[in-house]
Length: 350
Image (cartoon, rainbow, N blue to C red; front, side, top):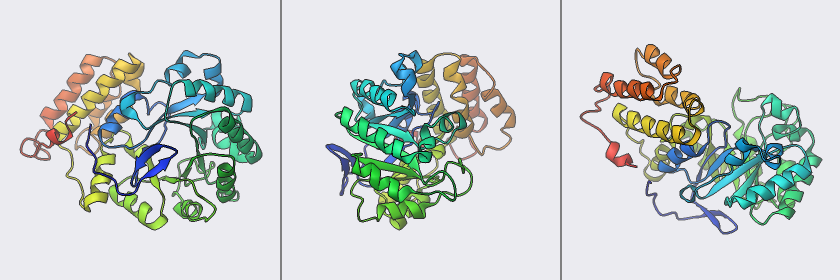
């Protein structure tokens, strides 16, 4: 694991310390499983979250939902994220999640996906804020570990009640709030509005940590978000897929003002193989291979004349063939970025 510099001002909830200017790996379905969390922790992610866990699936003892509860000590601080639309089910699920001993439980009030939001879960709760508040209060009272929330600015362009929502969630006892700077109707289109995130952070009523999320895809954008909007931490989602080293890039830039040297092709090949190994161990075949495809495409994004190789990466279901394809990338592109002369991989040794 990486050794991160000593922090000077700690962000914390209860007795859980996140560090100074902490970086959070956003919860993402079919992405933030233990294999990907391992990779992001390796590169300095301060806090990680599980995939979304459906409350109904959990209380009905669904095998897939139960498996998502497993967390490991090296991941800490780590959160289990729950979603659902019924208070009783969410309370019961939170109690089950607590038994898995995460550092905290996060409530998903922000997922915009139609099958979730239109059922009144995820971002759907932005259409029924009284229910959101009542549900949150019930979960806080029923559990003994910190409860946090991830949500969006509001439902659509004409309905952005995030300042009121933040105050009311704090009033019923949440310990931290992460805000994605888009509405539900935006999905992931358009620009993330960090101005409203900053307004929540700078609201004198707010005492809990505020974490900003949306469009953080570089060290420079992270630095700007901290400096311009004053957030306590930054959450990174899509930009980390197939690029777990983004956390190291940001940390190095925040600490030194210098852009980290790019990883060589050899670095990326070794990391892709490690990630594939972990995914295969955790989810088996074929699922562990299916869910690696989006990562593998991004690991080698930007390589010239890569279309044919990319098609092989995202179509084969043979694990041995996949390793062979990845190894061949190291051979074929060995000198494209000076890999042989400037190999940095010992710096990222796992």
